[in-house]
Length: 330
Image (cartoon, rainbow, N blue to C red; front, top):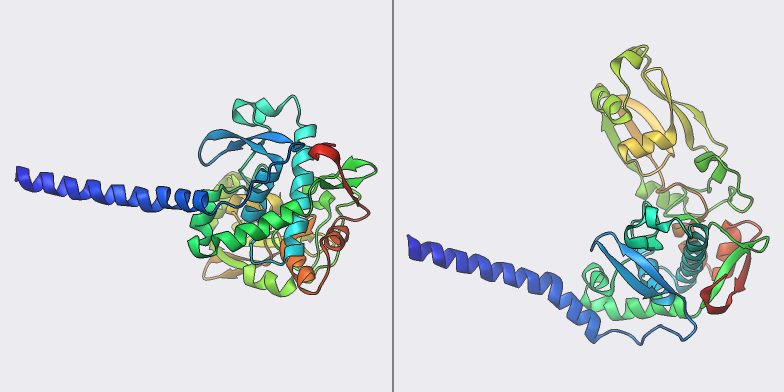
């Protein structure tokens, strides 16, 4: 028995070691061996980034950081002009957030980091090793070179409105028209207003259908039984925005914001249709994301039809200017 147990333990140890090699060391080696030329320039800005996955603070050159953001936020298969638009949006968002949050970053991110890799708080970001695992070794090099080209060709470019960096928010797919910032965050922003978009067909593919029973729905929303006038009243969209997204949803007589419903049920968007099937409430959504600012799938479609990155950005951010700033600073 003792010898058998030792053999099993040895086999398990070997398997664990192989997993470590395959999952960690191989991607790291590939990323190192095929790493493209460095992006860092003498005048580049350096920022501190809280990597929420690895739980460490990384000090990165802005150019290098933007490669990881663009690769994480947008498929590398998208056209180069779409990727360039994504880079300019990400650069603008980053520099504005760092400048706006100066002095209170320590409270937002561990160790006083200026920005983080959590997309629900700042922007997504992938390390080179993560990208090897995500894309696969076979396409890593052409993909990373394409993203780097998008970063280098837009060096220093940002978007401004009235001389100030804009809040360059973006999302996956708006569903045919972007949303007004006032409908999502309660504040009007002159360059974040609804515009038409060609991503409608993709919105249906990105949609989802979610069936929820009354107990789960009430619990998720924090609504107590005493707060519910009558279950018989059902669930319905009580009000919509000008772009046909739900703004207010009546849940058994209790009015809640569609944004609150989306967060509580982790729905993809507030483009919601509600029905009742087999005693459950069914939420059908189209599109993906808050819908404000640049639609990434719409940007991809514009790039496919020959639009340049600046035309893409000027379409989604009304009245902005694109300008180059020295040393990545504004």
